[in-house]
Length: 448
Image (cartoon, rainbow, N blue to C red; front, side):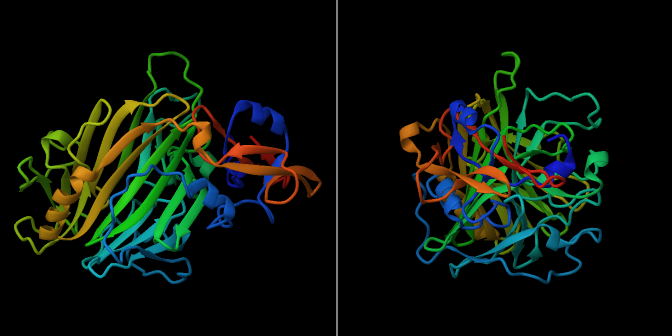
């Protein structure tokens, strides 16, 4: 991934498999049935169903009857003036999710990395208008991670940090490679379950600072469920297949951190829940003393709000629970003092050895402060977290076939003939993902 022209042509097919299967695959290209697997062509494909259909842990909270999301992909015209004048929303838009329950009053829009970049409530757009240097890869609701073994490499930008984004890369930091263009993290699989109205994605996380030295080694999963009454649930998962640790000093430490925030101009105040179930006004600058609190010292939720003294004021809450997961579980918040951005974020620091998966199920609530506070109490005890090692017997398998296509021998997902091999649909313990990469200049596909 040292050449952006090469990276921009990345086309992915991801399945869990062992090193022996990688060796057996050799230097063949891979296509899905009927042609190349791509970001635009994998929506509700058979392959996406296999990769995402059984990917998430059981034990979900029952949603209200009549809840779910309606999905739209066909939006062509976007409202002007919602975002920084430098950016055009059509460049990030993937799908729109509208809740079906009669008590929910919000709309979500999903970006090309599988992240939530827009939340519209009765007070309008509450997501930040974006930074003039970068759009929709930071000031959004996304999963981020930090791998402590990653160090700046020779020739990397001075602002190098090993933060891995579900959304994508900043276009300005590695400017020589990026050329000022956005690069959204490749959406490997995407699934909308019509029967339940749930939407899920599988993304290859990207180090946010650019492609010249990009090595994230993380697969990022998310599933969004509408619960009713203005609440939606997100289950995040992170699979670490990093084998580049050089010593035990880092101890496989990873920060697993959903990140986001709202427009300060729309929801300027912030409240923190107390352990007795009440809440208090807590306005601080992000990064200042008091802007990071232990989850166990709260009532398990916090909200940005129009007016903390009015229960009928509109609010948006993060519901993160009161338990300590890993070594650290903290909620961070506060006015970023830039770009109309009031930060809301959760930090879980834990050991995530290569070959294992971590997951978090949490909740978000939009609506009147009184209702949001009640839902914070209701759902905070339903937040769940775990380290998950999936056994081979637990995962479905996917047959792959050898085919001739475009002068190449390719591995093709399909359902006819004698399979050349089987691979796992889930990241079983110690497995490796298999990617398809296309070189734009040569038109050739390569399996990693």
